[in-house]
Amino acid sequence: MKSGLYIVASPIGNIGDISERAVLILKEADVIACEDSRVTKKLFGLLGISCAREFITYQNYNEEEQSPLLLNLLEEGKSVALISDAGSPLISDPGYKIVRKCRENNIYVTTIPGCCAVVAALQLSGLPTNRFMFAGFVPNKDKARQDFFNELKEIKSTIVVYETAPRLLKSLEVIRDLYGHREIAVARELTKMYEECIRGTAEEVINHYMQKQPKGEIVIMISPPQEDKTETAIDIRQVLIAKMALMPLKSAVKEVVSEYGLNKNDVYDLALKIKDEK
Ligand code: SAM
Image (cartoon, rainbow, N blue to C red; front, top):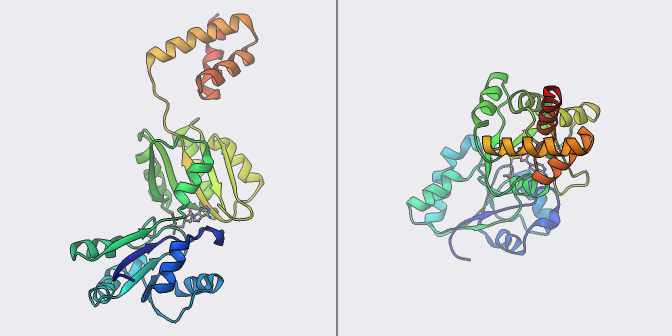
């Protein structure tokens, strides 16, 4: 096996999701750089891969000091497989610093791509996937959380963040207050037995999780802001007026929502306004 750094994605729940190439690389690498060697050794056990290799811990807090150590091994001609506890290394996981060092020192780097919670969650969400912004973990302090979501509010793409179950409701409350009727999705326990992905306004999703305590690993997604084109607004108004002349208000709203892909609450509010003006 050629000397260099091999970035290996591992499953995010279902062990069957590891790729054949990933298994091959993990079997052959001289050194395994991992977050928690107990977690990686357990995975090796399940996959029938020998642990008789050097394991080096490489975590967010020790990336700076461990990078030179890995770099030495790479310069000696060793092959190093970099693996996270779960999913894709470097995505809210360590790895960036050693990749950068390899690039600076002309050391071979390659990736064995695979599971990534951001991508899996987006695929299930039904929210637009053509443009998305991944913003990592939501901060856990109240003020920092508020600032974090406030800063992301103007971004014209789907927003994706990682969150933990105990903090989910706090984040959803901030999203409700800042993002109003924007549709959101919460993906939980992806690829595992209790996988779910629920969608609605933040208020609706809060109601869901007030009744059913959230558990497990979580990804939150927020749909992009609706384009505020006055021209479109006028057209929709005219369409609604025409429909309301022919059918009950609720049916008119339903038809406009499904024909133009608009937010139900926004169209309903507009319909009520039109009704009041009459
Ligand atoms: N690097 C990994 C990835 O993106 O593939 C993510 C590592 S990060 C330390 C762990 C976070 O990813 C979890 O707190 C959760 O937000 C998300 N995550 C990981 N596995 C997940 C799963 N099976 N279902 C939902 N979210 C998951």
